Length: 168
Image (cartoon, rainbow, N blue to C red; front, side):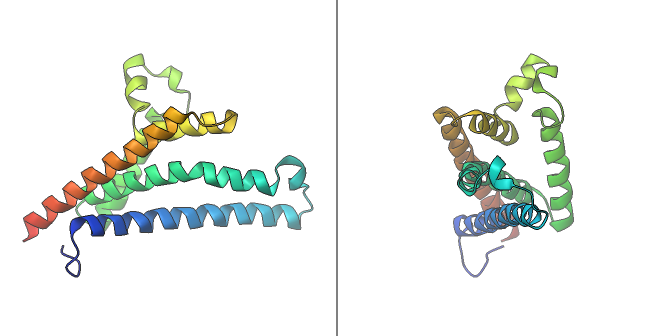
């Protein structure tokens, strides 16, 4: 568990940066593919959305990518190995997506559950993006996302520290 003598903070931050980098590259790839598809098929994409709006959308997505990256690193850290890590990430993300209103409106859920799910990473991300796409993101939404990132990374570092203690 001790990777080349690095402490658990460096290990977790390294994993986190890798997750976030991969997600950002994927988002850039998808945006580029959409633009290329529109260009090749003579769609007037510029009439609908300009390059400036796409850049603004990408920047708006950054806090969402950061919080979901921290959540993914925590889920992987909680799993025992690669296969269980992939399975737990899929199951948890699908369950939280279901509870956070990704598949149907959150208003269909009981009030107690909807209050809790709005505080979870996916619920915070949906709320942030809803406000961002409607107008400007609310300052409190942005602060809540960054607090969540901090909390998730602290928990992940603690889990990694405990794993290292167990294996020594």
